[in-house]
Length: 103
Image (cartoon, rainbow, N blue to C red; front, side, top):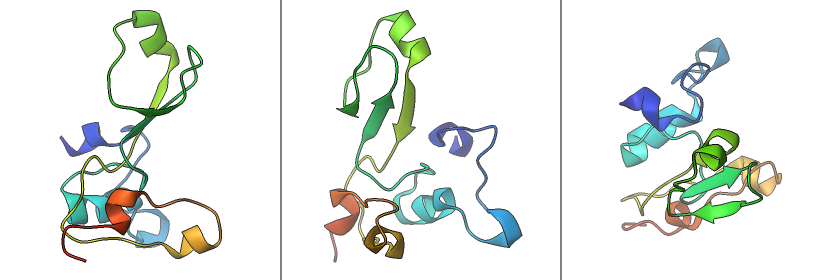
């Protein structure tokens, strides 16, 4: 189940190079899901020109084959998460992590 949460199960690891914790491990510990990103919901890239936040799955087999789905945080967690990388503009942490149930 953990591998299926990741964007690319074949090349994603819970521990990164040099034994450091990967983003999937941090997300797993905070939310119970080993997703690869810190933004909200799921973003679909490529394919039929549909980019951005998606909440519904497409039924068209061609669209599904051509789209890369990047999975983020799916619901508001109990505790939050902030990243120094956001201040450097390398990533953007989603609203679910910025406004947790118990700040």
